[in-house]
Length: 372
Image 1 (cartoon, rainbow, N blue to C red):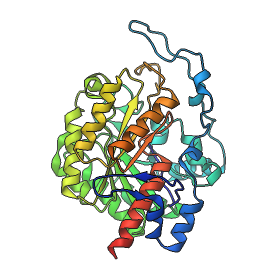
Image 2 (cartoon, one colour; image 1 turned 90 degrees about the vertical axis):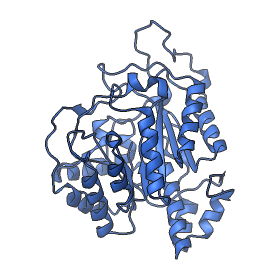
Image 3 (cartoon, rainbow, N blue to C red; image 1 turned 90 degrees about the horizontal axis):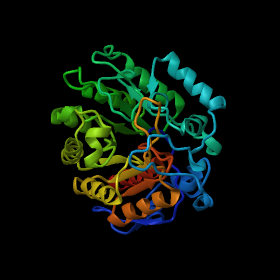
Image 4 (cartoon, rainbow, N blue to C red; image 1 turned 60 degrees about the vertical axis):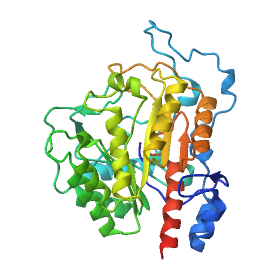
């Protein structure tokens, strides 16, 4: 769930969406400045962002699914094993975050990709998603390890400026802002979010900003505040299929409410790219995943990511199934055939995903060029 990035993407494939029919990546490049075209041509592809690209995982004979009534935890399959975070980039970002009293969802949610993203990987592009409004959530979703409290500490009034300063210092071109749920605040923290976006754009108007936001209890004025803040990508996660929502998410988080939030954001600002994410491995059926994708498409969502649910601690929901890389590939093909602008699907994919954001950045840059 996190990343911030330069404009590099390599795949020569076609996609279709409601506004952009049969546009190839080569056509996207033609509308960009020469330097941007060069970076796209030489940038990494999707598979290069996977720490351990799957090989013959079909030969794995370990148990991948718990049957009804079974309580034991499944053994982690080899395609989900990642390296321990190390390196100078990782240490530098961690230290700077501490100095500025900033939090990241990378740490709080115990994301398995933190070493690759903070360390920069072999491409040297260190990335992290900043988590606004503190590190304590007012909700208690059964899949999430973020701290919870009915009365978290008040937001840090200097956080919008500190965040903008840090992002400018890192020289990022694409940043993701997210937050805990703050049901204790009258506006859910939406004005704090919007102020942070404006501060970032003030520091550097060329930085592309994605906001991965809560549902604000369905408060559509709060949704409008975010949608009109100057951001580029509005993201809100549906998380799971409708029938599992009451079991997986906090009771205040409702499936139809999340769809409404995404729909209103697009209605308020049709130029926004909207984005959502689905976790697999919680006991959902293929038919339910298909329906969730259709529901997201019906409310105008442009980009969707699908990743493996990972149990963060023994107190949280157990994994029902470890979905194979080939099944994730199937859902990526389904998403592309449905006409989403971008579909990222893989075991280690999270709602903010490096390759996807490289690609989204190229679309946004092309729109800016065409608007001139």
